[in-house]
Image 1 (spheres, rainbow, N blue to C red):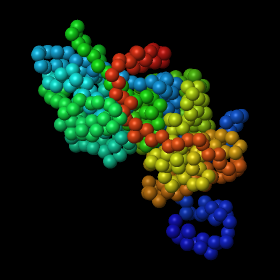
Image 2 (image 1 turned 90 degrees about the horizontal axis):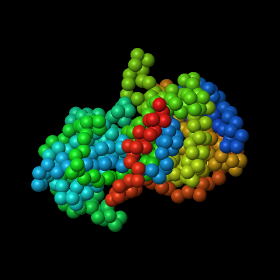
Image 3 (image 1 turned 45 degrees about the vertical axis):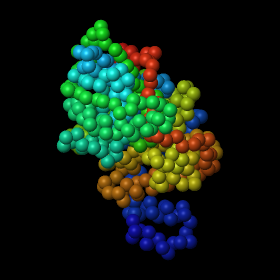
Image 4 (image 1 turned 180 degrees about the horizontal axis):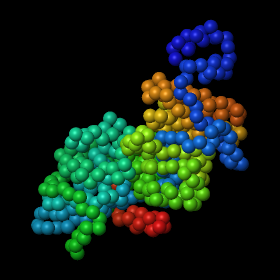
Length: 451
């Protein structure tokens, strides 16, 4: 790249458009723009190239996961974990956690549970059990990761199947009571600052932790039940898309019906085929290796634009905007679209987008707000190597195309939006009251509809 730029030192007087065209025509950009398309929001007319070619879409897959979730649940809905407390002696109890596949079931949630147990004078636990819908990780937004035994777990960039974490991993994590309690004081201070009283200096002693499938748990007559909720769906989707959390995406995708419902939604309801879209998980990453390499979610440019349009409509039907569940370029500065790669005077505050990166492709999809209306877009760049310079070149190609789209439509219109960082909002899950309808009932109903 440096050699190419040096070769252009004598072209200072050339127009910016000409310089860009020279760069794109040269070997400076080894990455190749394999898909570029846009669609107006009124006539829904799509233009571009390679409109119907299947391409890996990486974390743009989370737009599909968002649509799956928005059409399965109300955006204000919360998942409720149910905690069953059974006395076995004067000071000893059995505790069972019936999960709801909360994508962000972490140490903070366990602190909520421990606080409530201590309020009930439950400090000594004989058996702590959990079912298959408890997907507990100490940290659910960790980019650097943490170790479970010898296994390094990195929730943000996770490459795992939809059933991760396994009961063995959850058991290991929940057995680390000292690790869980170590950061309790941080939760206590945070809660107090938000007028929430957690139990001070709790005791949490567990003799045995084990996995107990939901169909094997039989509550007794003397059981007591408490609840801890997730954040609402809208906040979780915003969080998932904000930092492109792969763990959260796979959990949300599964909670919304998984592959079975995805295939029903796209192949039956939307009349699509495997020539339009193929999905294997909700994140866009995959750890499975085949003879042909890794298998990724794939979709056509046309299919991505239609999915974005349906997601936008679905959010509006619940009286929310797309920026309530996706990030705004430049304005949401700590998000994946908040850095310098796609932020400039044309895009900042006027584009809602989702990034995507896998070993073979870099993608960007979203809506640009222009003087001539909203323009849906999708760009997909194929990489020749996994180097950082190649990735930077790919993002430059995308940025050039996005700027061109905005300019050709009269320039940007800034959104009336202030940054909403969902990762600072982790207190919504402190609920004292039982839910009006359990997540289990809604999810069961959802799967009944699939059948």
